[in-house]
Length: 176
Image (cartoon, rainbow, N blue to C red; front, top):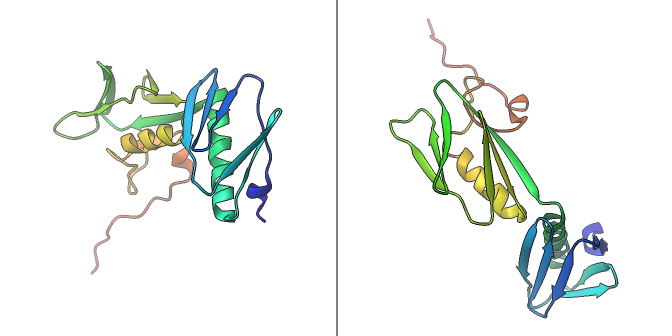
């Protein structure tokens, strides 16, 4: 059995969990999350501990991680920081939409989901929320509008600290 499938999750005192046969609802200071359970999955709770049982080990490990992420998100929340770098690149908030001017002839508008909070600081976009999947999905949706350039440093939308890991390619050279 894998380590994830055997892991017992400790429930923090600030988090409330309600279980039913088909779904799990988690509430905490950072928000509220819900997860639909697979019919083969059985979630067991004793006092301040919770774990998953199933004859299918792959499902057991997957749902164990999903429940852990729900509890962590409801307790502390998730945060992603994007950096917008480039000459003339600008970001603005307006009526629940994020407006991005990233080197195109037009502005790109992205509507912000209700469960997420977005803050702007000069060239940074801070995205916070209680659902890990939605936070990272929304951040990636923004990043796809102008991904980091592979030929030139400091051009595009980066995850914070990502530019250190990018490898630059050399441009074409003339043959003689």
